[in-house]
Image (cartoon, rainbow, N blue to C red; front, side, top):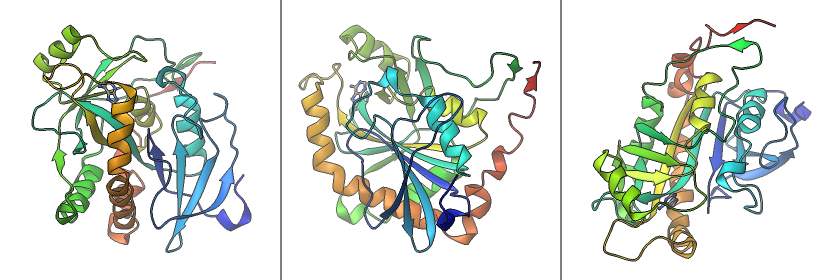
Length: 281
Ligand code: ADE
């Protein structure tokens, strides 16, 4: 249960990825240890407050970055957020670029996903007697994507470059791709590659949440003539751009807190999308 102070629901959550563990202008006012039928989430859920609006923040890889992508308890993360009243999730991710024009430090707001996970991650809430099928043709929320685009456009003067739309290839990892795979993903039309979009986005849809990923390019994977990706490269670019990343997420939260976006934030568009789920036991 929420402390008294948070008797009200927390409508918006940020899932921080590699290199994003804080958000500018937002003060943590509580750290909640939540448990769910799917276990404990990756980290305590911090409640941040800005102008009276509570925001949940969860570190996807844990507070000490101790969880590999295939170890992230995505069901517990989504269920824990939903139990706090969350209806909108802004998820951050470091990605490799599969396109020349997406340069390291550029932001991308993807609108499609290709699933290259290997089925080893628990990927659904609908099992064990609960049968349901949700639409996933468009895995992200176009309204949230529009808000991110608008906020990034206002930061162009600070050198922020954002690519609107694109396909994120979500691979299993934790090893990076082979060169042949990297070229294949480009031929498939992939724009960027990560290890974290799934099953998070699928579970968010099953939980009827509005979900949008904001990606930041940290490398050209291994298809490019520049250096092949390694962890040091990902961290170097993440650090170099963390100011802009925090700033952008903060601006998106400011915008989402406006009354005019309340239907979108409360995920009215997704309400009932999992209603066909039937419990047989
Ligand atoms: N995350 C950051 N860069 C990546 C890459 N090249 N492949 C997969 N995940 C990544």
